[in-house]
Image (tube, rainbow, N blue to C red; front, side, top):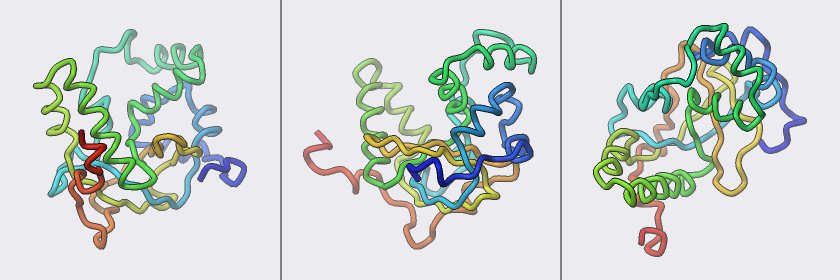
Length: 191
């Protein structure tokens, strides 16, 4: 998944068929360079049993007031004047975070939890409640959405941009099941 030369650029139709396509106005060229449609296996935090919120991106779960309006014209202007890093962040808000293995998925939850806990312990507990504490393995095909071309080496993180008819529950690997994230933390990491 790290070799971007192997990936076929998504078509304009595939980009327009994304669940949050209206949030990506002006980002089509960037998405074509950085994402692809293809088969992928990933790991994601969920509730057990899964709930509708498990399929929602951060921007929907934890909405913040945008700096500018939400009209297509304003989004296009804003997105066209962003750096690549800002474009990646704008896309990630409406993508679903995945990890290349269950341990990295668990470590990410624990890291985020501890970071929030230092500032606000009550918010830290809400964070776990909101995002779940179970890991599932998911299997996607090219019709399910677009996958980020590069997995972050250090964290194993990658974004998945779901297609309009996407339902996470339909892609959970039943043989893996829902595993408590603590199963993937060593005693040393849990401290």
